[in-house]
Figure 1 (spheres, rainbow, N blue to C red):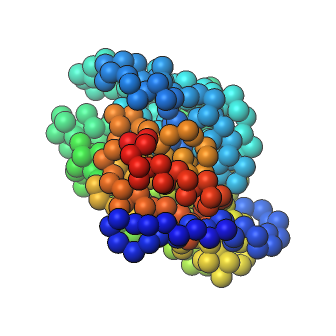
Figure 2 (cartoon, helix red, strand yellow):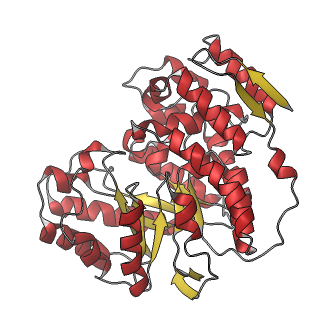
Length: 392
């Protein structure tokens, strides 16, 4: 089905069922990349009327939120839980811990990774409190069956810490934690407080502390060349890069296009090694169906098929994550709503209202072009409601 919709701000947009899904599946092959989808949370309708002081966790639709994670896993993705995509910095630790533990209870074959921070503390006023809190959360994640990713710690920026203080902080966390661990580098376009994070050569020196325990880094800097540079150092140490570059991920995941050169350990798993990035991306939340197909083509050695599927997903990501980048969750929740995964597209603090109609219509058109709209008729009906002011 192909449907034309009016666009008050420009040319009409077209919505189409995910026709690419009608292509034959590539031959089954072992995955050559690990890929985690950073998943958002789904709110109940009751959140529309709640005050800003109320406990947001009361308004999380836990059943739909977990069902959405099962949807992502069904297309081959591990889950990146309680990360920025789940509005971690607004959600608070009690709800984040529940996300982690409920995700673990799903026992997904694709596994999950989750963010370890210090948000269980009412106040972090000294380094000991910060370190102890992160170590505690690492243990909780691992007890739930996940891999811990050490979230960036904005307190280090607030305190004006230098390179040596960064290294000392991470060394203490690493020494007191079991592996595997992943370090997260999140750019200020996602959280303004992180301007200047990892000063000097601190990231490389942190990754060198214990490569057997610290298995790599998640790069969310939206900087293609920086990721390539960090990746070269990681490969020398037998570590991996999980790309978080929602602008350039297609080529970073493809890498040199050659077959993997071997394997490296990630916990109990052996994962492929080569001149490429693995992935932990928020964009996969919105395009799991076509992106999952792309990765299966890559596993089968079909680079043309991989590019045909993944490059339109990248165009979608560039629109969803356009400046101001931290509003990207609006595009993801909107796409999930169009596809029937939730009853409205609300986000915490009504971040969904901060993207205008013109932006959302472009998101819908690019999602359709990528093959990520599974039912064009339903999506068109919901867009018409949005244009009429319903759900805003």
